[in-house]
Length: 418
Image (cartoon, rainbow, N blue to C red; front, side, top):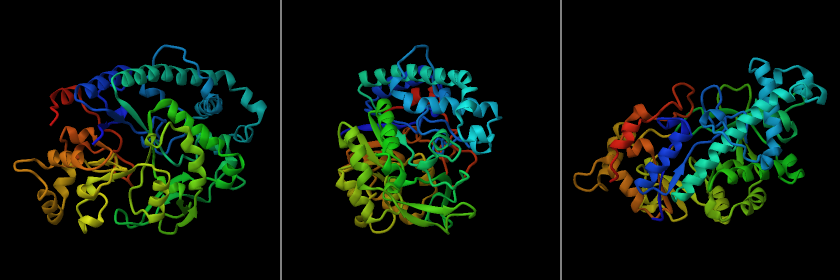
């Protein structure tokens, strides 16, 4: 095992601020962890989810702020569009861009000019975030903590990116999608999941030389040491759902750019260890082969490892490979204690057969992750604190009571590393 890390979003810290984040870095260092994985830093949607953000680039300023004037020259490709979008949206009661007056909707220069002064406020907020982030990044690197970021593959229809680059997305002449992203029915959801995020016009991206994707990945590597590509299979193929359908059963597969885009993005990293492919769910062999062709690490989740035939299950601790990062669970799973409390007897028996005498299930799952062949083991903070289902971060397919969990400094002080 090369290292161990903790999955904890900034909003889950006892204090959502630069001081809180710096204090957490000290906690990670003190307990011997070498990586901190976060959820996307982009502004959340109305349900609090950072996975359907109004920006693929902008940070959510509420996460942290600091005085300072770092150069934003590298951010100009997206910053002006974001600042204008935020200023106009604020002036229109936060209504989506496709309901704005036509001159603003269509970005007529004279209409935008009226908002340039108001946009400066939003530029300064991004600058103050970067001042804080630079302090956090420096502190983490000095402490030997690698920061792992998360890049949602899709973004919201109501976003600065879609407003500014309508041609790069699958929209009709009125700026409205006929199909949106999702996943087909599986053992997690009989109706599949209809996410509602817009789909890419891959041919348009190809014609512009993948500039938007290049800028997006460059931005991520300015923020993080390692980048996790959420829903990696979407680069191979995506599930397109008719926008008027109630669920995702009527969707169909669309081909993605696959190797072509990865060949553009991978040189932006210092090495393939700096990109992590989220390849969870029902994944065809072609997607695994795509990942392996480019020597990217995939993911294994122990919660998925105790059903079916063990040697056919890539999530079973004995069959995890060294080109994977292992998790007890992710932000979309129950906590390990909550999972254990709801586990069927057959799967419980499989877990118990691997536990040491007197070992608690959560403790045992953490040990099994550490003993696997995986390159890195990452644990949700809730599992390190042995918390039950009440501390769950997110339940996929639901929109209420998610993204709310926070720990306390008392919780962290009481933690004793096994």
